[in-house]
Structures are given as structure tokens and as C-alpha cells.
Image 1 (cartoon, rainbow, N blue to C red):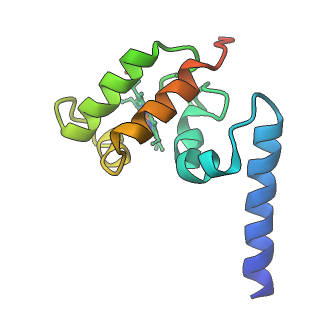
Image 2 (image 1 turned 45 degrees about the vertical axis):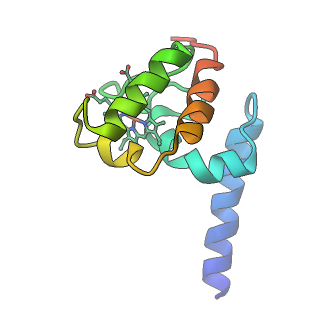
Amino acid sequence: MTFLKSVFLTAAGVLLSASLAQAAPTAAFSAKFGVCFACHGVDGHAILPTYPNLAGQNKDYLVQTLREFRDGTRPNPVMGPMAKPLSNSDIDQVAMYFAGLKATK
Ligand code: HEC
């Protein structure tokens, strides 16, 4: 119990400091889309050079491509399952978030 609690608090702390570092996604946003940050970065700059940067990308493009991943018209073994559970409104939110970040690379 104590162990789980400290794991949870550590995870919350990491998310909190990540969000304080810049234009702050809300806790609710991070809870939902934190998985995206694991690869694309909380600042929209990918953690590996083989993953795409999303910061500053056109919002309409992000919406379109996420719907394509979800619907299978852009088949991808990684992004297909990621996009599957997203509603149109989730896609709009996350697209707006990444489009609004400043590309620094
Ligand atoms: C395990 C790592 C990983 C996670 C987690 C992940 N992605 Fe991706 N994402 C990728 C990779 C790899 C690609 C490139 C896919 C390809 O080859 O077309 C990609 C592509 C994309 C693209 C298209 C970029 C472009 O330039 O066409 C968008 C948009 C995107 N991801 C958004 C998201 C969102 C939103 C989430 C969270 C719901 C997410 N990703 C979670 C690895 C990841």
C-alpha cells in the first residue's frame, strides 16, 4: 500500500514537474494523453529520432492523420492502437495541444 502510494506520488510529481516546465497541460489532460508524451514529448519534441516531432504541426493535419490511424486508412502498428480509443473530441483536443507548442528543432 505504502509502496503503491509512493509510486503514485512519484508519477504525479514527474507529470507535475513536466507540466510546470512549460505551457502546462492540465492534470486531466496529462492523465488522458500522458501516453503520447512518452514518445512525442510533453513539449512535442520526440524522445527518439525515429519518432516524429509534433510541436507546431498544423492542427488540421494532426486531426486528419489521427483519424486515419484510428480508422485504419493509415495503417500503423504503433499508432493504430494508440488512436483506436480516441473520440473526435479527444483528437481535436490533442491536435490543438501539439499544434500550439513551439517547434524549437
Ligand atoms: C510508443 C511510441 C508512441 C506513442 C505512445 C504514441 N506515438 Fe504517435 N507516433 C509514433 C510513431 C513511431 C509514429 C510514426 C508512425 C509512422 O510511421 O507513420 C507516430 C506518428 C504520430 C502522428 C503522425 C505524425 C506525422 O507527421 O504524420 C501523430 C499525429 C501522432 N503520432 C500522435 C500521437 C498521439 C496523439 C498519441 C497519444 C494518443 C501518440 N501519438 C502516441 C510513436 C508513438
